[in-house]
Length: 628
Image 1: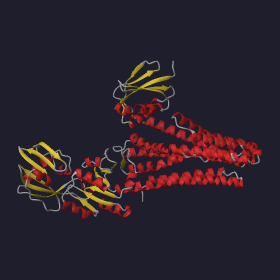
Image 2: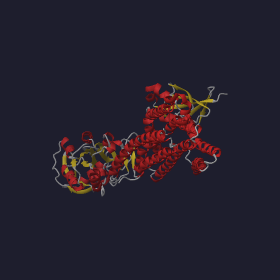
Image 3: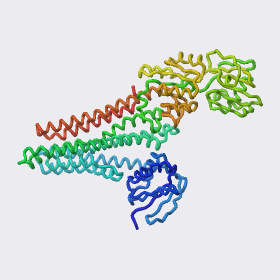
Image 4: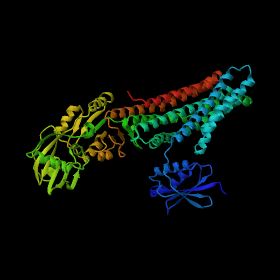
């Protein structure tokens, strides 16, 4: 019986993936444990041959990620199929996804704790061995054995990391460089430095894994606190995708850096001894091989790449904890460049519910009744504010245009309810409203019967948000609204914004935003059309998949969002430039120190490397707090 098996996945929207058939299948082939790939065009089935050791869950997850990149997905509507390697297939009945029980969660937590204890004990034993060995200089043979044990304990963690990467088809150049450096130093008698290089690398990865553990539980807590808004699995995938994209962005550069380190180490180790060719072997072993091994020991950059990605990941987590959710594919960098925020009026500048300010009509009761019947069932703040279920009369042939209003039939009469433009387009003469509220004209059978003026209460914290944007960030605030010039002008004076635009239809708003190049803040329910078409937008009060960010409903989160984005950009630059600078300084300091003093200084620079890398991670962790 073969030790391989065949798994079949049905692909939804397969035509999207097959536009680049070769690229899609090549990516699938790279999944760990996949030995062969075929696609059945008739059934839209992806047929995979797997090694016996391969995890079907891991393979399925990887296939889903690749399919999503191509605009496709796995379909679970039909029974999945599994086949033995001899081609015999058996149907597997779909089961509902089982929710993790308390026992399952406890087992998972126990596994995590067990892994943590194992790594902590291993590194602890390595540290103890190094410390003890330092005091055994008078017993060189014993000291050598203890340093060897210290290396073995630390090297165990490095080997586990390498095995994990091999299973996922990632390169293990860094692990090989660290182990090679340590072994060379142990071989030439620099036992302290050799064990320190392995210990330092393992310690950094252990500390980073603990940070990831804390972050994961923080996301779980977020999901519990906002269970109706934040889905743990979805958010955690989005969170990790950001880190993966940064790793992918820098992976080629990191590979080049490692190759450069290898080349420099080889040159420093093998070229200088040629200047004393008669004693080449002695010069190599006694001096220059140490320099080359030390350079290799300072070559680790993988944690630094993770730290660069952490800046944005931590920022997005903190924003989510405050109720601001970035949708996938949206970067914080876009918000760091914002110098103007354009607020829509209803539900953003003001509370969404409209209140009747005054009714101007000879028959106020009739005017209000027609307005209520016409607005019934319409998603609009006026409808939300005035409609009730008392009237049994229903409007017929309702035509609602968001930029204009409503045309309908009520008891056989043609009724128009809306703005001045709607009346003009239907040749209805009106007495234009000149008050300081937002007017809605009501006409019946071609004649105006009245006007109902509404007022909206300005949100308590909107003025504070405008002042914070202006004073702390130098960002201008504007209001854009479909309301009358007099009413919008009044709002401008009341709120202190720099500019206000009145009489703006949805199409005009989109055009204006494209020219203004600012951040648009609209209501998630009332402004969905503009939110989906604006270059950069925030939905207030509702998670909107078509806009960049959804905020829980507090307009004060807008300044916080921009502050967070600007800080993240600043820290990203710091965490990109500083590692280059300090690595270069350590590299040069190590070479010149040893060449001119022949002091065993690798251990000093390994400790410095660990400390500075931890400080960079702490710099990234600042993004888990609120900006000043």
